[in-house]
Length: 202
Image (cartoon, rainbow, N blue to C red; front, side, top):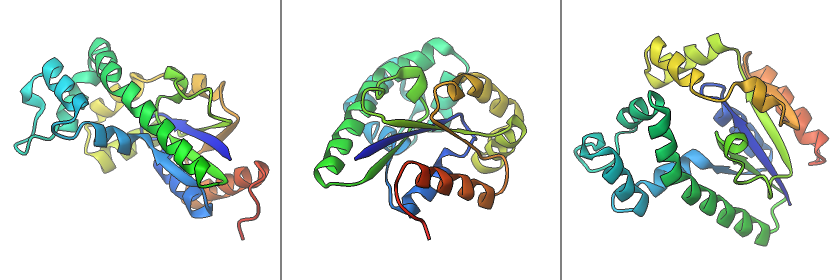
């Protein structure tokens, strides 16, 4: 079984690329989805986050307001690190569990979609190849404003808070430029799928 890491900065379109790999037959593990699961009300990570950041970040139903929490952590590197300290080991643990599950099921390829593969390195021992999705900054800003409702200033702040994509690319086995249209991106995905020996895609 091949385990492919899929990463890229905010607004680069990792999820779009992950979906394309899924359509070709890969099993996709979405770290962001796991991150949402582990912070559900009552979960250990939820309790730790409330202790650290206070109850002001909660919605009326007790769930964490991701937009409020995001604003706090993206403006303060220390707080962002504290949040990662609470959530990251739990996310990594769950990803490893799922990889082992898929291995037992004899899946051919698993794609792990996660933002911090390069920065945190917690999966480097089990990832066979790394794909970095890139996009020009103008496109990133446009996506964050239109799809996530951020202001232009918030979008720029979040982009600049991350490791420069040029640094991530240095660690990549493959790079997908997702600045253009979906068809251009799909062709790149299909070329990679073929080059890593995963059969045809007709």
